[in-house]
Image 1 (spheres, rainbow, N blue to C red):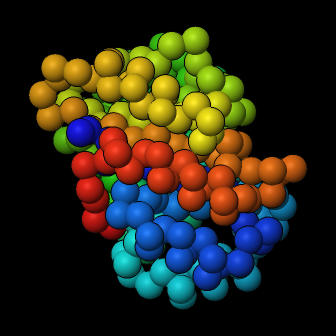
Image 2: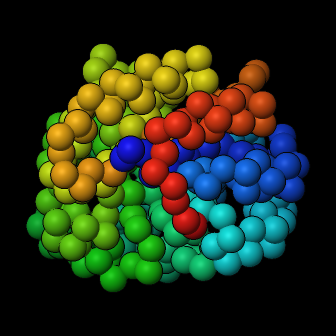
Length: 243
């Protein structure tokens, strides 16, 4: 099987740190996606500084798979190499996701900035995910991925984080690891994985991951039961993974 990660995104102050960490330890293919936002921290989906500090202490250095999803100003600092930019601690977060890569300002980047971004991704100590929602963003992300010697990965998310399923799941791009997001929940995950498996069938060395956020929440609160149900169902497709 080619599924190597099931990313559960959006754990926040509504769920005890130890509970979500214990959940991730149950499933080798699980990854916890932590949304980081300067303006929204402490609100639903975006953990407070206190929760995040407790989480980092509980996780330690890569004892489970974790990804930092940079939003808003945090993503902009990296994308545009603003003063003081940095990637989160690679000892904790094996992957970093840059949300907003499909925004107009990014798509209008000049060649110098795009080359700079590729150079910084290539030098990063962790994999860097580019979230894309349209054809132009996919084209730029693909160019960056190859220029960064495949240290960049691509997340297909046509709704831009709104949790809406696409009309169809796209085929992966060459040998670039690709992920899929949008409307994924326990009730449809088997059909989603089967459809994606059809898209990757016959392609050599193809690995993909899925990312669920809205589909593991009830009344905008993180639901451990839904997250566990989704991980349980994706286990049959998983190839086994390490942090």
